[in-house]
Amino acid sequence: DIQMTQSPSSLSASVGNRITITCRASQGISNSLAWYQQKPGKAPKLVLYAASTLKSGVPSRFSGSGSGTDFTLTISSLQPEDFATYYCQQSHSAAWTFGQGTKVEIK
Amino acid sequence: EVQLLESGGDLVQPGGSVRLSCAASGFTFNTYAMSWVRQAPGKGLEWVSTISGGRSTNYADFVRGRFTISRDNSKSTLYLQMNSLTVGDTAIFYCARLLGGSGCYDYWGQGTLVTVSS
Image (cartoon, rainbow over all chains, first blue to last red):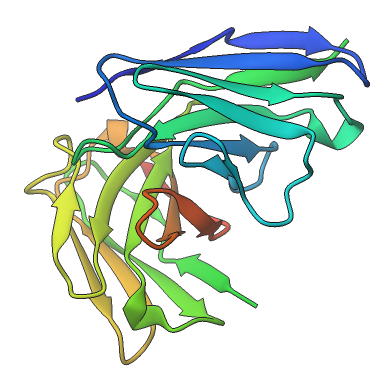
């Protein structure tokens, strides 16, 4: 299976900060990568797919980039509603896999 | 409005079985592939299985031979039959809709909890 490794596992930031989360695949996955946001007790929500395509309705402060093995999710100006856990997910191989998650906490 | 509503989660003993259901509404169910994704308490997300609109299936290695995904397009319902359950299968099970051919999930249910314990 393709392993997805996110870094950092957690981060503390303030409202208005710019943050970047990295996701690395154990082998090349082209741009077959999605990002999800999950808040405690809730189902995940799709944020970005195809590495850089924003889901309709998601604020433009979210952006994604990367191809091959290295990907990033950037939030340009953190808002209170953005504090959550973020997961990357690859769909390049038959067995889809998720990263372990990055928890974004309020500083 | 797209809605996915899971049910069937329960407390079961190791070695037992349970069938999960996911009732879909608000979209043309038979034109979308669907998946089950699980999340153990306090842990990350784990893909379990996917079924296409045409009923071709795929499974994670850790459930192959124990779990069976199926769908009834006439009822707009997705199922997951889970047999030979172990303590390690304890998790919230989410059903999720695939976004076209993008390989990602654009809608998720609220989840149903399966607890495997003696």
